[in-house]
Length: 479
Ligand SMILES: [Fe+2]
Ligand SMILES: [Fe+2]
Image 1 (cartoon, rainbow, N blue to C red):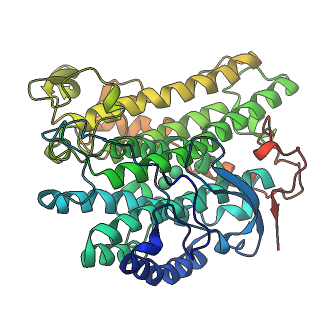
Image 2: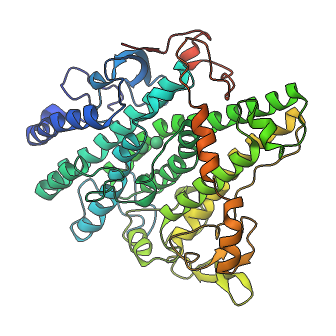
C-alpha cells in the first residue's frame, strides 16, 4: 500500500506516477501554467517569504505532515490519494453492492467530469479571493495559517486536475487548462459559483469564509468521498484531512475575535453588547457586527447547495457518483426508492414542511446536515461569550434568510424565520446584514502586526502554537 509520498519525482505523489508516462507528461505540461497562476494570483507580496508550512509526507492517519520553512512557489504540490480499500463496494444508488469503479463508467462520464470540474474550480477561486490578505495579517501566526490554507487549496486543485488528466483524456486536459483561466470576480471569465466570486476584503471575512464556506467544501468532499468512482473517493478522503485545518482556522479565528471583544468590554466595564460606539472605541469588533457577518456568510454559503429539490442531485446519487453526508453510517436501503425527506418550503401560512421524494431532496438534506455542523461551532463561540459573563448569543439565521438560489429565492424572511413582504425586508435588512459603516470599521482595524508573538488589538492570541511552537515563534520570515 502506498502510504509514503514519493518526493523524488518532480511531482510528489503516491500514485506511482512514473509508471504512467502519458499522465506524467500531461501534468508536467500543466505544471508551469500552475506556477504562473500561483505567482500572479497567489498571496500578493509574499512569494519570497519563508513560511513555516506543513507538507504531506504520507497519507496514513498519523504523522502525515512534516513542517519546515518553504517559499510558497517552491511548495511541493502533489498528487495524494487515501489508500485503496480492498474490495470496496459502491455503497448507494442503482449500483449498490457492485465493486467500486477503478475506471470512469462510460454512461456517467459527463456527469462525473462536471462534478470534478465544479469542485476543482472552487479551490483556486478561494486563493484568488484571499490574495491580498497577507498585507494586513493580525500576526505572523495568522499569516502562516492563511498561507497554509492557500497552498492546500492549490493542492486540492492538483487533486482534481490529476483526475481530469488521468481519466478524461483530451477534454479532461482542456478542463484542467480552463481551471487556470477563470478568475474570481472577473466579469468575462468568473469562477463557476457565486460565493467564490465575492471579495474577501478583510480578516474577519476570511475567518467567516473558512468557517462557513470551507465547511460547504467539507460537505461536498464528504459526499464525493462516498463516490463509487474510487479514485475520486480516495482523492476526497485525503483532501478532508487537510480541510480539517481550514475548519480550525475559521472557527478559532472568529472565536479569538469574540474573546478579545468580550475581554476588552470587561476591562472597560461595558456590560451592554449593544453599546456599539463605546465598544468600537476600544478597537475591537462588537458582537452585533459579528452576528451580521455570520448572517451574510451563512446565507451566501447556503446558496452553494443549489436547489433544494434537484433531479441532478438525484441522478448523481442514483448513478453512484455522489452520496449523502456519512452515507455508510445511515441506516436505510441507500437507494431511496420509496423514502421521503421533509423539506421546508414557503407555503400559504409561512414556511411549512412537506414530504418530498428523498432522492430529489438530497441537496436539502446535505444543507440541513451542513447547518447542524455549523451550529456546533457557533455553540462553541457562544461558550466563549458566556464564560466572560456578557449577555449575548450568536445565532444562525433561518435558511430562508437572504437567499438567492432555491425555494426561498423569491421570498423574504427575517433571521428568525418570519416571512416578510418586500417592503418589510427593505426596511429591516440593514439591521441584519453588514452595513458600509460596519465594513469601513472592520477595515480600519486591519493594521498589520508582524512582530513575532504579537497580535493586532482586535484578536486574542491562540492558546497553542502550530506544531507545538512557542508564542514568539517566527512563523513567516518576510523577505
Ligand atoms: Fe479545498
Ligand atoms: Fe478548504
